[in-house]
Length: 323
Image (cartoon, rainbow, N blue to C red; front, side, top):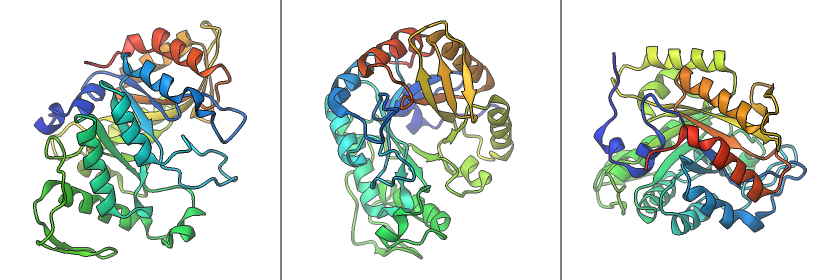
């Protein structure tokens, strides 16, 4: 049965640019550059990289939520706070989709996440896609005074809190892990289209049936095509709503200077090769039904502006996002 795209998602600038049935688009995750030998990227070229991307056919720029430097993980993303960064990106871009990949929901107050997300949606002119994650760094939970073992339950509860606060006026409901709402308070602003596009990032310890019917889409970490095909088939089987819910994959990319360098895949998530081999690989993902691929350029050792130019000129045009 052919799935439909809800009207509010068809009309949402960010979602419609990045997610279309039968089409693959590409995205980059912050800081949009290589920093292979350090957990801390040099942010000098950050603004220039963003403006390069905004004028291209790239589908989306995604920002990560990494509150602390944990040496056991060795990566701090874009260094700056996720919401502050998204606000900055809203101000210096005009076209490209902005997404969170993702807010670590169990660590965050859902009321403030809802307020931040709706605000970014307005400041960007309706280009924001809210991705929520469950968090994979146990060391952060004691610092926030949060339980690690019940993060799956709090992820679902926070999801519903965000939905209700951004879609209902003066809502009345209670929560198990948070507060209660008595119909005397209303969260403003509401999303541009009345409903935020919300994606699950990673598994977040959720049942696939929940993801297939509650989330507007799913972003998963893998470059293994047989595995991706299996996941998409299972999501299709479990989808009872008749709504198309796009599937996207995320992987690390070492983009080599030699355009003809063959593709190498490590640990089902790390890609190394030239622009031609990467383009061919993304074409295979498109054929398999993947809607969006997010590249993390961290392993790339080339200068940032050169790498971005290569990616935008020699890979993106084949998967150009709609205006």
